[in-house]
Length: 139
Image 1 (tube, rainbow, N blue to C red):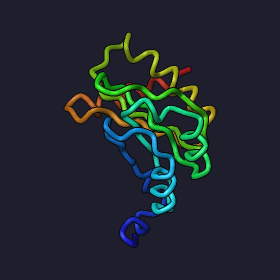
Image 2: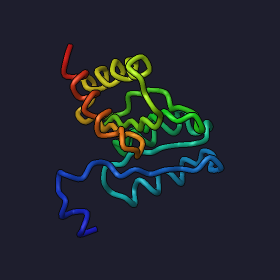
Image 3: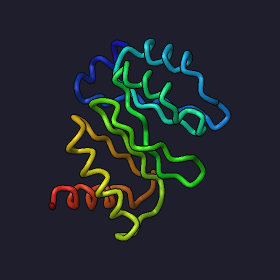
Image 4: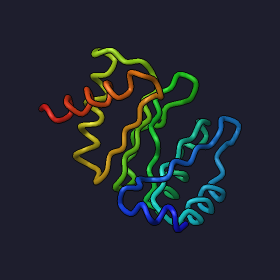
């Protein structure tokens, strides 16, 4: 509440994660996003969520669909839902494996007001983030 509000515009969307055992339940999603009352990004780890019904609820709340690059979970499709794009890149990357993500991020920057990109928690993450930032800035 008040503590989050004190962050002002420095606070990005709230990440909401659904475990692999939680299948699609749009009433639950709608209730949760309504209760948050602020921008959110939803990460689904069960494929049943990747459905038009889910996208309608996310769009109604101006919430993002998280695209996660992680071998253990299904990857969400890149669906244009609103002003926020949210990516979680959770692998080790080489120049070759990072190149398609740079293209995707460039595309997201042209179609969204905000693009959030998060990397796996490891010592390489800051360097990787700078590399992506430089690559995106270079046409």
